[in-house]
Length: 276
Image (tube, rainbow, N blue to C red; front, side, top):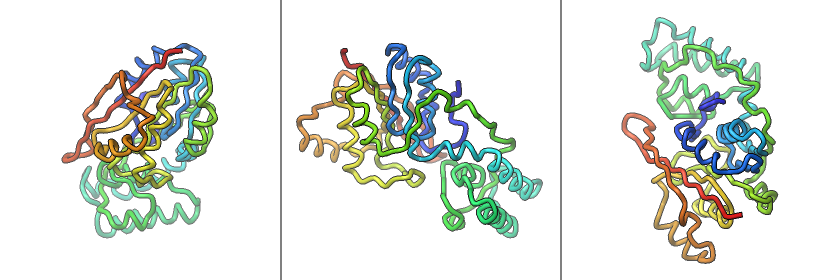
């Protein structure tokens, strides 16, 4: 069982693994888990490893499996960047001048010749912690740092084994399974008031709030943070009174997360098991 995603992903729930496994233990062995916002696939992976007889549907809306398939290529690119700065730039110090130019030239060569660059994984090696850019023009606006990984990312051909993989809007997937007996929805949407630039979607406030509709009347495991906009949430609930409070009687687990030296927030996991 992987306890963290094989490649970097914004918002992966590795800090909740132990608590998530405890929650999974409360559901029958043949439960159907539907991971509406699959992200890195970590929740789906753990659900399947913990409950091997279960059906786990992983919504790979961000095409994480494509990044996994390109791990060997990504390793070669990062190895070349490692060679460029070797013995020239101290660890975690800025990459400047000619070396910075060579870094960008190598990335552009990769795009031109190979046609694919995993910019999220690349960002974790040459940018400040938790900063991710998805193109060379975006990266040129930032300071580069020598945070280059010292070893290759391991290939992980078994990471998604046993999962039913789809890629669609979460509402479509929810409608497909909302009447499935004893279904449990794993709900980890992009957080309110946090950076969502690496997700393949653009969300307005109403989009975040609409997600709450999938919780009513179903068992779920839901993730959010203390950076959500409570006032707007309450206003929305006032206009949708029939929903009530989907978190009533839910159990909450919190974890204080640190993005970098001066930014932190509280991650939260809430779960609820509906009576059969």
